[in-house]
Length: 479
Ligand SMILES: Cc1ncc(COP(=O)(O)O)c(C=O)c1O
Image 1: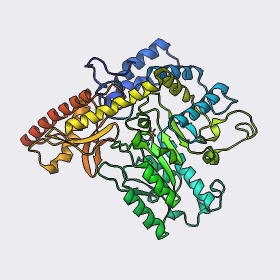
Image 2 (image 1 turned 45 degrees about the horizontal axis):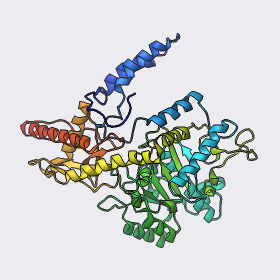
Image 3 (image 1 turned 180 degrees about the vertical axis):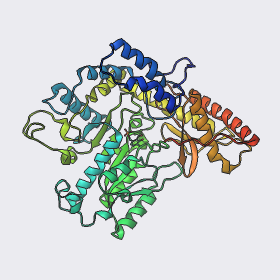
Image 4 (image 1 turned 120 degrees about the vertical axis):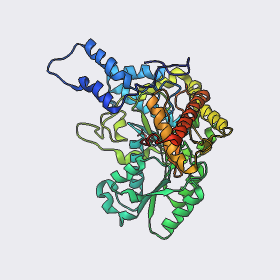
């Protein structure tokens, strides 16, 4: 595995560029299980020849598609130890060191993000589960206020469960939809709130929606979700103003900072995250830009008491009278990896100064791309970026506006097929857009602009071939 970060331009492709059918053919020998085992050397050769060429090189400065990064050096060390010892860290009984490390790490992270002294956190597998647990805790809280215990009575305890609602920005992550479905509330419980030109939640609309829904008693909004770094555009909702509105209406505030929360550690970006300490719960995914191995997610609560509904005890496991720390009573998994260790060793190795520098680089790269695109006649940024994501459109002269959606999809498809760079395509405000993401510290404004140059060249070719006859078919959209 190569180390991350900027380096000499690298001509190797990001991945083989093979089709799903070709990849499946290459991988078939790996899953043709046989009676006799193979020597480890033979297993290694198979993996190296058959699998590695098809894996994605997240360390390359030309990877601008998703939220993945190669492990940072300190994180890789911690992950190696966690793997070698394969500790489960649910409680003291199963791993004294692992359980205490997780608890101490959670408390240090609460301090790092400026949360209240009573704040607490739990380590989870992914941001989607963190969001889901936050919605459950918010619902437990609402039930408690209605005078019953959700754990005992379930949704039947509510007079009319159909009135329960969660408000979130129209750009909020799809895990919230999973969340309301898994809680048995259904998609109708998730009410989208419009965003402004920067793709941040519009607080005026939030206030009006809440007043309308609650005022008529039509709905019972038990949770408002602020996204601190949306998946599609990296926008940070105005958390402090949303906290005021929630306080007025008695709604639980959850901050989905799975992607963006870390950027609050960069002093120049910190003002965007004002008010996060007022949220009841906050999710964060260190496995995104921090360079720690997947899985690594955190759910914070502003008071450790808020985790109480998660605690389940048994006679053999997580006994209520057991002394010692018990990370397993704050969230669902009873088998938990020692995910705190790579995060701890990474921060130790880089120092907080190094972490901030690592986080600042992609933010500056995206800002640089935005400023450059403002001067390009054939590219249009669709929003001013808050964090490390910019959505834009290529608008070559001569291509009619009605063709522009199709053109972006085609550019995306052509770039994907070449396998040398990667960008994604999304829809923003009903329009197709190319989406550039900077996650690794090796992604620079120059590397992003090279991708724009490539997109320009492809746009030219596509526009030419279009005027000469049938063009490439539209490509599947990725998020
Ligand atoms: C804003 C936001 N929330 C939640 C998630 C879900 O996180 P995970 O992929 O770790 O489940 C993502 C993932 O991209 C995200 O961007």
